[in-house]
Image (cartoon, rainbow, N blue to C red):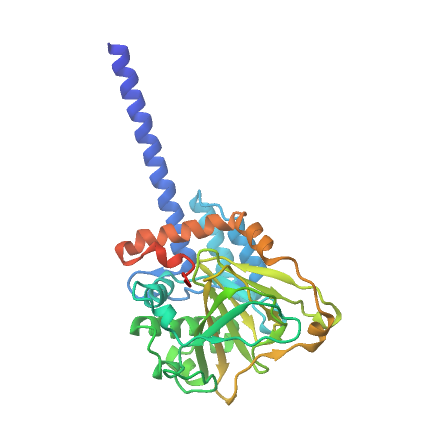
Length: 357
């Protein structure tokens, strides 16, 4: 009897130890995500919270991320804090990436993908196709469009006609744009956000895939600017990017942007989409200098690449391959951290592709 009792106590102690260890590991994983996403429960966006790295370096970082020690967390912190030294707008054909601040993503998801079906009521406009672009339908919507309008030219303040994002989301989007600017423009790093928004114009919106296809290679603008791509679905988003010497080659590569991160491309980066399973929606934002006032905003085709008719690998197999790596662990940890920090404010259904039926 005593022997049975000792075994029971030993078993109970072992279970308790495993539970305590699991809770510690869980807390450390949350600390990793909180740290690299710059989560600040008081202000939503903390000081220097968007710490960017060149895209390939950032993706390598999260693919090899180990969540099991404070030492490794400090190593990641050092790497992120040194990221600005590697930022060079002129030579970054694949752009830069970082973790998305949690309050920003949660607020946008809540405003667009709640039970009221805001996404489906948005004034979507189909992206035009030509040349080799085959069957497929992808739509976009800019938040500064007036109701019933699809005018996409210059406007002083994107928030004037916005009826889609709440006041908190509007504030967070502007702060997000300013944080990205400070990463790409060290000369603006000491300026207040109000000053930055007087010099730079911000144009956020969304892109949605109904059925994917290989889009023609293009630039989003011919002047200085930054194009931000941020997934709003758990599967992330895919971009096809060409190297700096693209005029001599038709070979590019896929960039998979995991949910919980974003990609910021310089305006001179030749790229294309438009991928994702049906109902994949992503946040899209252009940041431009106000001195460059334009009346019509349209894609600028790269005829050198498009005439070569570059053959690309199947995007579905590429997406499946990326989701099969440790990147999926990062996405899981990011969602787990949102659930822990936001509680009932967050609905996990928001991370799914929207139903178009």
